[in-house]
Length: 385
Image (tube, rainbow, N blue to C red):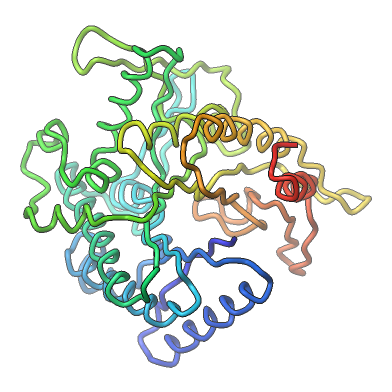
C-alpha cells in the first residue's frame, strides 16, 4: 500500500489542472501494476493560493465547500481504481500551526514553537471558527466522495491525534488519560467522532465561537469506513486527580529521550495507547496508522550504505507496541510508515530525513537504508523482527 498526498493544482488554467490529473492517473496505474493498493490523501496542507487570496483560506466556509467539490471530482476521476480515501491529513498542523502557531513541550519545562503556512495570527476565538470550517470541509468531502465514487468506495480521515499516556496502566490512570484525550482533541477528533462539541470546548475563548448549525454537526459526523491516526509522540503524561477535570499533567523530564527532531519525544507506548483510546473512547471499528516514523542523522558512508541504527531501534520498539494492541483485539488494519524515502519536510526543508530510502537531492540517486532492510523483512514475515 502507498499513501501519497493527492495535490490539487495551484494553477488557474485547465492546462495545469489536466497535467495534475494526468500525473495522478499515471501514478495510480503504476501502483496497481506493481501490486500496490493506493490509499489517496486528498489534502495534505496544500491549499490553492486562489482560496487564500479570495477567502482567507480556512477562515471562510467557502474553502470548506471548495474542498468538497474537489473531493467529489477526484473520486469521480479515480474511483474506478482508487477505493480508499483519506480526506484531510493532520488538521492541527495546518490550523493551529498555520493560523496561530503551536507551542510543544519537549521536556524539562522547555517548549518549542512550530508554525506553518499561511503563517498568520488570529485570536483564540477566531481559531475555533477556523477549526470548525476545517472539520466541516472534511464532512462535506465525505458526502461528496460517497456521492461521486462508485459503490464500495471507502473514506476516512488521517488525524494527528494528541495522545494522553497514563503514567500507570491501572483503571484509574487509564480513565484519566481517556478523559484528557477526549477533551484535548475536542476541536477535531471528538466532534468528528461524536457530532458535537464538548461543553468545556464551547465555553473556552469567551464562549462566542464556533458558530454552527445542527445540520453542520450532522455533516461533520458523517459515517466513516475507517479512521486514520498519525502517531509519533505522546501529547502528555497523565495521572488521576480528585479536583476537576479529574486528571493532571505529569511534566516531561529534561532527560527524557528524544529522536533527532526537536519536537520528537520518544515513547513507543504511544503506538499502543493511540489505537486503544480510539477504540475505548469512540468505538472505532477499523483503524489505520497513517503516519509513524522518525528523522535521523542519516549519512551515506564510504561503503555506500546508510546505518540508521536509531531508526531500526525506533521501528522495532514502536511496532512491538502496535503488536501489543492488535494482540488485544484492537482493530488496526494497516500501518503506513512516514516515509518511504527522504522528502521535503514543511518545517525542516531537506534537513531532517524521515525516509527508509536515502535520497541524494542533487542527483536523485536512491539508496535503501539499514531500516529499509529491517522493514522489508518485517513486511515479509508480517512480524516484528
